[in-house]
Image (cartoon, rainbow over the protein chains, first blue to last red):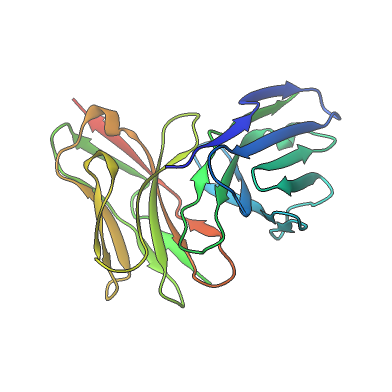
Length: 116
Length: 114
């Protein structure tokens, strides 16, 4: 299957700072990338959907000014957590997909964010 | 709107025993259905998917699932559990419209006992 990478895999930051997480599709063009958040022992919660070259669509309750998403190319999307607070600590997972709805979403390995 | 229900947040089986993880879905249109596996501190790996055609789908690591429209189910099975199968399993549904998001079930933690 296709490979999706995330960087960094783990990050610790101080409260009030911003953190950028990268999501790359390594061997296919991802017209759509998704960002999820996962709390311990819980399912994935979709935060936003980003299509290459357009603004991301955020799920209800997700602050778009806090979680900035950029999808500037067919292989790269970034999630920036601005002015991070301890409650933003979580496991963030991206996925990438081609254009058609039957195409599989391929998931990255996730980024563990800890805000002190 | 679509939703996924996974019955049993924890399932324990003995090594060599049958694995059965249950998934029921609700969708207003014919769905695309997926099973993913997640190992600790890792992302999700696709086990198998149903889009169209044969309702019995075979996936990796000896897993298979059967799409039963009349029961709105997509249960995951494996004839003989292996210790390495211990992980979290997620069932997901995706609509065929313009919204291509996956809707996940709450997950089932599979424990394999020696």
